[in-house]
Structure formats: structure tokens, C-alpha cells
Length: 107
Image (cartoon, rainbow, N blue to C red; front, side):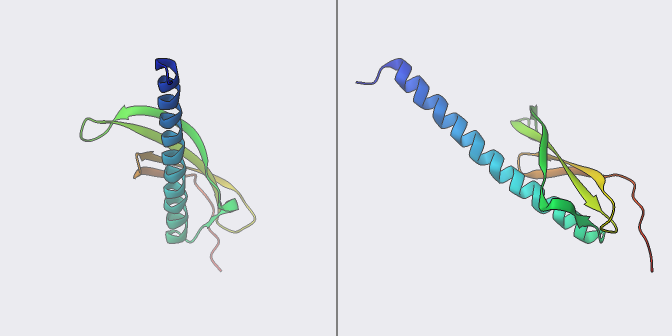
């Protein structure tokens, strides 16, 4: 027979799994946004990876609480250098992308 503690534990586990799954999806969207921006600017997204830097709860446009995530990544203009970039999302929606000043060589 399940006790109240057992049900609470199962509920907590379900909430944590849901958060993990949605975070995984958000990271995939962030990687796609970063890759798209790099391609638009003729830059190279290095390591094809993105790292979660910050996460917090904040109110979105509709007043609902949403996870705001900031990701960091690195890009290159020549393939020989590395520059930092960051990306901020609310839920799965892109809010901003910031790229460090970089040198672009023209042949």
C-alpha cells in the first residue's frame, strides 16, 4: 500500500524527470539557434556544443512563470581562433544572441 510519503516521492521524481526532459529539448533548440546565427554570419560554431550557464524562473510576456536559460558557446571566423558567444531563451523562445567582437578576413 502506498503511503503519502511514497506518493510525494513519486510526484517529485515525475517533476524532476519532466524538468530534465524539457531542459534537454531547450538545449537542442539553443544549439539550433546558435548554429543558424553562425551560418547567417558566415562563422563556424566550434565543437557543435553549447553549455548551460544560468537558469532562473522569471515572468514571461504573458505574466506566466517560465525558465530563462543562458547558454554559452564558442565560434570562429577563420577556424584558427575562438570567440565566446551567449544566447538567452525564455522557454523555447530565443530572446537574444550575443557574439564577441571578432576579426573577419576577406580574401
